[in-house]
Amino acid sequence: MLMYSCPQPNQRKKMTSAHAQMPVMVTYRRNPRSTVKGEDEEEGSNLCAICFDEEKQVTLKPCGHDQFCFSCALRVRTCPLCRAALTSLEAIPGVMSEQVTTQVIPRITFKDRLQAIPCGWIIWLLAGLLFWLKSGWLLSWGSGAQHNVHEMVLAAVLQDGGALEYASDRFRDDRDIVLAALHQDGTLLRYASARLRGDREVALAAVHQNGRALEHVALLDGDREVVLAAVLQQGVALRYAAEKLRGDRDLVLTAVRRDPTALRYASLDLRDDAEFVLEAVQRDPQALQYAAVRVRGDRDIVLQAVRRDGMALQHASKELLGDREVVLAAVHRSGDALYVADDNLLGDREVMLEAVRHDGQALLYAHADVRNDPGVVLAAVHQNVCALQHASAALLANCSFLVQALENRSVLPRLTHVTFPADCHDIDTLQQSTNKEVVEPCQV
Image 1: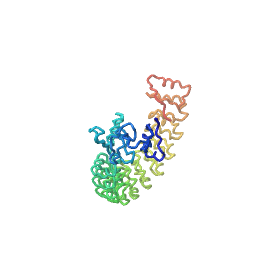
Image 2: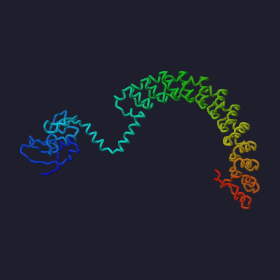
Image 3: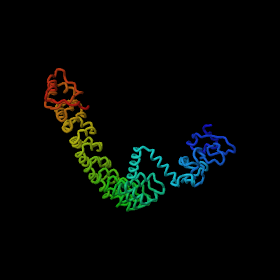
Image 4: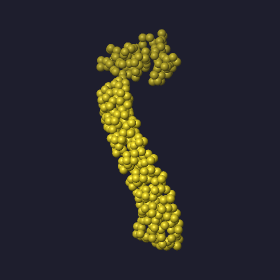
């Protein structure tokens, strides 16, 4: 009768899921013997021990068991009897055609599986493989043997220097491979061996490409030639130099000329040198913030800074924030410098007038009496009509003043924060004039 085989508990571990669900025919005969599937088979039967439908046709290699048909043997990768890994199938003489002599199981299985993959997926897989090969990432997935192939590692690093990260220790200590990576990105020196990170030639190659590679050199941060090469490439590489070289006037000056913000990494003696700081400030006024406290109180140095960038006033000493001449020089470049100026100067008409001529919105910082000064407010509005919203309430209620402030404007923003007098009809006329363009509201 037909039924499903039910294997014994101690046999289930030896069976694949495909075998466990296979329907078979069970017959009861004299002198039975147990097969690999747990079914009873008559001794001396010539049928396949798996399907019981076909004759025995092949011998499994290398174990030599021959109880299976060709179709069933192709579906297994290990012998069902002894669990030996299969390498090939050999036809039993006289049973199968002479054309079928040997079948290599892995090749057949791969071909069958490959044919089952949709064409679109194959294209995506090939595209991904090509990307990995080009990027050098494939090296991170290679076997240990692959990592030890010099040509392959060198090719990967030439294609993508970052592949050095995945190379074995042997090749991180290979001068040619490391130099090939450093020519692309000097900071890859961090993946080189300690020996090569202390090699002067290698270190020079790295800092020539990227000055920040100085961070990764071993015991060479005190080598003047190496550090000089680094700061010539990138001034802020000075931060990785040895302490004694941060006090080398000529070397630090080279770094500052390359990048004035490198002043922050100079020694305290150099940051307290007014002449030296002036070199940095003339190139970038904001470098004043890295000067020593004494130099930030030097009137001449601060004047040099604020005349180039008014906002450099924020780095001046507290005493100079109340210096009228210094603040005037600062607001001439930037009205926002009033934000840090001494409060006493915010009521100084001359200082405020100078500020609003260059930035009308600086009227925001003025004292109340200055915001009530028609001359200062008109100067601010002429520079930026939005400054009108910072005028005093008295001026905003003065119809003649409002007409004077707005009549020559070709563009009128929506002054949403200004309430005009209800009886000032001239303002309505100005706003409705056909030659006026009304734009977006002013920012508060």
